[in-house]
Structure formats: C-alpha cells, structure tokens
Image (tube, helix red, strand yellow):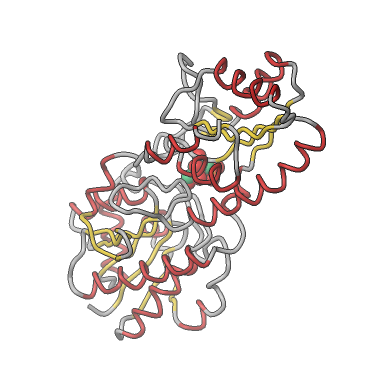
Length: 342
Ligand code: F6P
C-alpha cells in the first residue's frame, strides 16, 4: 500500500478536520501518501482530489467544518457511480479510502466495499445515530452547544415568565434532544422515537406553573411528532439523493399550540446549523484523532470493509455492514430519565 485517500460526506460537524489531520499524520508516519477527495463522494465520481501533506493540515485541529468540503452526493444514485469511483481510485493510484460520514455516507461505503472498493469508515454525525459505535464525531460538540443555548434561554424565559420551545436537530433519533436536554435542565424533552401527546405536555407545563415556576423550557427534536400526526414537519418536501426531506418547523408549531391551549406566552427558537458550528470539544477532538489514526491502521493492515468505532473506552473495528441496520435510536433508559424532570 502506497497511497490512501480521505473524504468527508453528509452534514458537516466539528471534529472532521481533527479526523483528517489524524489520517494524514498517521499515514505519513507509516510512509503513505494521502489525497483528499473534495466534497464527499462527488469528488470521487468526478476525480476531484488534492494532495494532503503536513502543510495542508497544519492548524486545522480546532477548526469546525471540513477543509475538504462535503456534499450529500450518493454514489449509488449516480449513473455508473461504482465504476466511476473505482476508476478514480485506479487513475490516482489510491489503494484504500477512508470515508468519514454518517449512516448515508457509510451505507454507500458498505455497498461500494461489496463491489470491491477498499474502504474503511469513520462515524461522524451530530445525530449520533450510527449503529456499531457508542459515539460519533460531532455529537459531543452539538450537545454542548445545546446545553449552552439552554443555559442562555433559562434566564430570559424566567424574566418574561414564558415557555421557550427549543428545536434541535435529530431526524430519526433523539440523542441530541435527550442528552442536550438532560445537560441543560429541560423541563420537557420530545424525541422522534416517542410520539408525544400535546395534552400531556401542556398538563406538565400547567403543573409547573401551579407549583410557582412561571417559566419552562421544552426541547423538541426536529423529527418529533405528536401521536397520530401524518408525518414529520418539513421545511422543504423535496428530497436529497438519499431520500431525505428537509425537516424543521415542529418547534414553532408546538409553541403555537402550547400558547393556544395554556394561554401562557410561548416563544420558539430553532438552533439549526449553529449546532454543527464552532470548535470541536476536547472529547470530539480526541475521538476524531483516535478514529482517524485507527482507520489508517486498518487500511495498512489490509482490513478494508470495516468501520472504526468507539466501544466503551476502546477503539475497535466492526463490519461496515453494521451501519445498514438503519438509525441507532436513543437509549430508552436515558430518554426515560428526562421524564423524571417533567
Ligand atoms: O447530518 C444530519 C443532520 O444534521 C440532521 O440532523 C438534519 O436533519 C440535517 O443534517 C440537516 O441537513 P442540511 O445540512 O442539509 O440542512
């Protein structure tokens, strides 16, 4: 093995640059060349790559975003995608690929791996919903951002005697809402996995008000929906190449409903992409560094078709196929803990 490549696909998260840096540093240590693939799978389909050496990765450890760019290009939705990906690998002399992504990017990696591409996956997504790993790069930073937002919103909610509904990301899994809500002391947490009853939410808020607490914070994941709803609230119905519509709006809808039913002044705040910005936390920097280095080790040892993962305190390699089990939903016990504070 002489040359490897690295790409970042799907939604960006803080920690991607830390992972890229670790890939390059470990590869250099092992005497391997590295090419960066621009904008996720798009770059591999159209042969858009850039050499990555020490100079290109200098100073990127604390930077959010990704120096390689990203996209939601699905190589399996593109005409002749697998063949074009293999052609770029052959033309550039790439012996192995590190694909850093969430379940879409890694699901595509699993399929391409079965078609002969030497690929190792690295799990990142602020949603934290990739099967086979206990944590994904970007989740810890997102949760800290949610916690800080709740710390900032509590005093203004209290000063104005209001309810504030905070919408956080999380399409199919309520990890960010649950962990962010626990860390920030939310009064109610609503997740995609458990349809909610608006009557119950309002009853909870009324009990709190009757107990003399004239303010409240409700955290709702963008993918949450009331029981019996026709579907999730979408901002944009058009789907991306992986079949996802753009979610958003449940927070505002719920705030209106709470105010109508309880006559309690309510505001909605959608944290949106703020949750994916800023510098990575120490946890995400170290996780990204460990996973990036481990991915190079797996390729160098000839073990493609795996994803490097955090299991307990250890970094391990699991079959890439694990990611195709669909989204890893929130731990029910952890979610149940939020109800202690309802
Ligand atoms: O990458 C996952 C995610 O953060 C989801 O939680 C959210 O639904 C989506 O990305 C938003 O994507 P975009 O960046 O395309 O707006």
